[in-house]
Image (tube, rainbow, N blue to C red; front, side):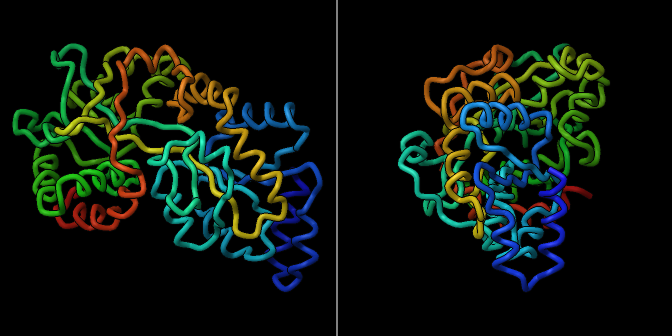
Length: 342
């Protein structure tokens, strides 16, 4: 690991030593992964992959800037795979021209069309839904639509993180794709009018504020609630005070986003990278995603974790994820236009 990190830094500094640097990272039986995912979530997967294939996985983790890092490293980059979350980051990586198309019949057979890039630059490997955390005490209804979040009956009762966060940007972009820009703007104004407080914090903090009575409902991702319920002991009271409602759009379907993978443009270990990407959609990895990460598998026939199953049956929105990417900029502009975060 340390050699991988040291060589990466040296390669960027050297700049012109393209061939020698690239060769240094082309290691038989190894693959280099850059990821935004927490180590505790992905290391069990990499350990299992190594056990199955004998291929060692070298990992560099960061909370931001990996696309720019790969771009700066250029042809000297040791990155083989970018493992990330959210269509926003995958779209950014493609636009930064740091990825190359993946050609894999196995991936095409396993990953549904709407959960992969039409040009093969990224594939989804698991799903998460953007849902409602509702107070057990104060919210009696068990169904809701995204459109209803703008209903005045929720005035002063909704908590949410920044409208510019990638998770909300994707939800808002889906709304734009479905209803058009004008209606999306009207909806965002209504949602803003219903907020109990200025958008802030992360998804877990929204559940915290519902539990504290600051709001009745909040917007969050499915796996955070499961982690609070089963893993984060100090946050379990927040989950215990709330319930998860799977919203749908008025025409049916719950908004989902992806964790996904891209093959780096200059991957020095391309063959091993594709083996890893294909392995991540096999049964074993998909079961691990379900039980370790509390995410929804993209592979058909793999059961979700019992906590996630307790939310009810997920009917993912039929809107192709690529359509969300196309509307991200419009959604972001609308957030600023209506002063959502002010």
